[in-house]
Image (cartoon, rainbow, N blue to C red; front, side):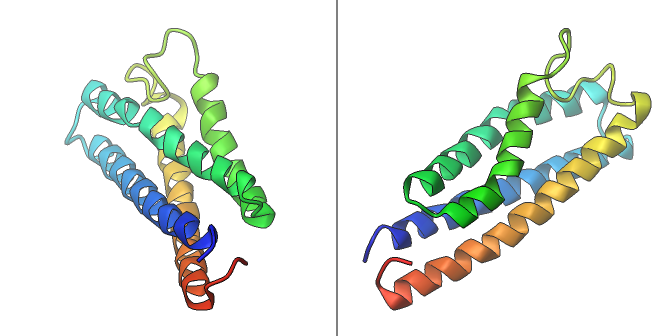
Length: 144
């Protein structure tokens, strides 16, 4: 068993966590949209989980680079870069990516919902890719 099987087992667990987190984001944003939550509570909940979303995704991206899985790395990088970009370029004065004073302005709620639904699709696709690669590397027993 080479480095591929443990890498893809970790990747599968990591993607499962990220998929769960994005589903939580979508549910919380839909609760805000339906007025089950106020904007401040919703944004505090979501901003708390932004950094725990970035770190595992960046770690997985770095592991893909270090182990030489170039194609998967190139496909996985845009989502990681987008999340880091959004975190680094949040407007000054906002409490985080999700700001309660602006979330209802200029269709930001709809944009956040669309972004998280796209991330959900992205993580769902990669979850099954890593599942396939994990099974393949465990059956073959050698590196890809």
